[in-house]
Length: 484
Image (tube, rainbow, N blue to C red; front, side, top):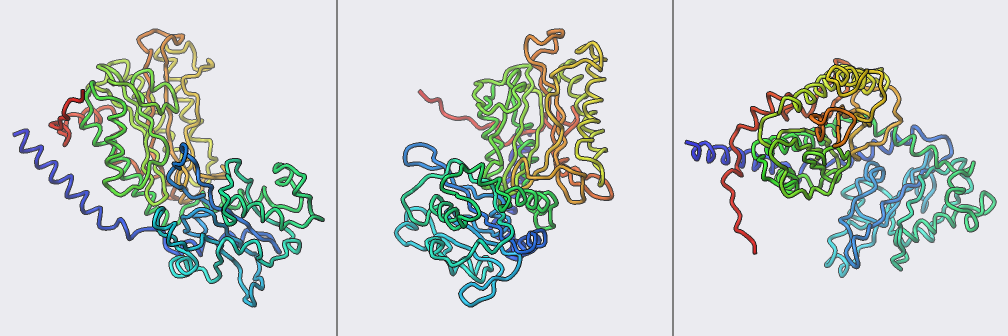
């Protein structure tokens, strides 16, 4: 009977996954989305200003191997272009470029058949025009001779330059594009050759402090297109949590737990993890950003804290569940878990349009302090302690900690609610509480009608988790050969 149920489960699971594959190549952000976002930025920009946004640098992994390229989220948000060594100029008012009145110019990597044979296809000028909807596109090498008098602008908007941009000896690489940009700033505004970057940023003529504010104002509120992708990333992440609940056993390694989550992500077409996966068993869960995930066995009677999120077409989920390795919470574990659950539930209720961003954290902290005192972990709810050392919320989107101005909550923001309690070994309390670490994190859509938990698909109560952990898993009969 068990094998029949297992076969039925596998068939249904794979059928559902195959159905998901049908949309993988069809649901990227549209070129109209990026165009509208540029228009939205332009409305923020002061009169007679230009915004200059560069692509992210290529990061080196080791020797001649680089990390998989990941675009500057602001650049991708405004252009849809996913290649390095590029930049965009966005003008408040139309400018005369090559006898054309334009309000934006994109510089891209030049087409090169030999390089593309090794490293993949490039869009080039025509591809950027046809696929991304830009009227005026140049190769990056043309930026040097590009005729634009920056001295005529009242504000030059840009973001601080990163310190890991390397010179590839290509005249059109990011290193040279930034160098050329600095050289184009007239000397009567500031002497860029003798000033450090930090001085350059603080120039009264430049707008380095304005562009991050404008971009945060745009990105913190999600459009309908963004919400579709973000919801898919969250759904995929929730399914990963469900599958590991079914598969978990005490002899599983932290790395194996991570691998099952990330297999689900790939199966559903999520290109990356939104951040390094956190799988902390026992005391490892007390390390907030524990990413080694190298414990060989999670261990009988231990809790396993799993903070992971799929990145789907650029948008990142952030979902955390904490589960007992053997499928059953101990009395002490359940007491702490239920306290965190209560704090999270009330914090979610505090997510309202017009409320200040920090209110959910304040609500969660008050409940946790009171609960810890009642359990005897601390002597009084007014005691200082480090068992809940972080805030309960952050924005998510193109970054897992998405950019925001952290003012009042607005409709169509998506934030996390993630209270936690972490009691490491040798804490100043009864040792029965030691090595208990619990975090519950969900992704919450802010609406006028009230908050929506987008990750509620993953069981959240202690009872629902224990019930899910009794379900069969496709991995129950998966046996690997022994390696010597």
